[in-house]
Figure 1 (cartoon, one colour):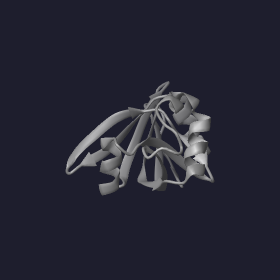
Figure 2: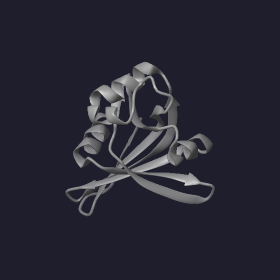
Figure 3: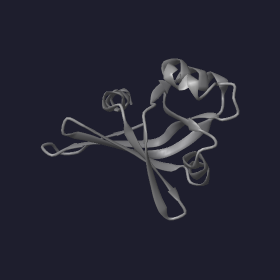
Figure 4: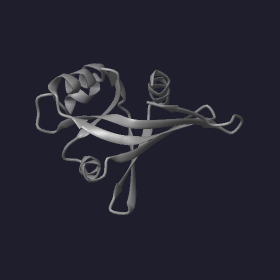
Amino acid sequence: MNEVWEFLKECGVYYLATTEGDVPKVRPFGTAEIFEGKLYIQTGKKKDCYKQLLKNPQAEICCFKDGRWLRLSGKLIPDDRVEAKKDMLDKNPTLRGMYDENDDNTIVLYFEDAKAVFSSFTEAPREITF
């Protein structure tokens, strides 16, 4: 899991795919942190992606850097605890202009049953599960 987190951080931007009905929806994201042994991302409860994840928690992340890419799939499980949200915001202080751990909008989600696949044009894919 640490290798996945490190690659996400190196990339800076990753793309999160969710579904709305049978239509895929993809958007750029940047937050990823480890808290209590789980990989978390953050968004707002008012956003469509959160509403989509409530209906179908299956999601996939993809990012690319230096000829290598990562596809991370699994269920994103909401964690509404103040401690989890505070940890994310403390590690990403630029988000504090839009979010606060005590507001009714901020939400963090962690991966469950995650499968990460590292790939490149020159090497065989390598899988990590957590």
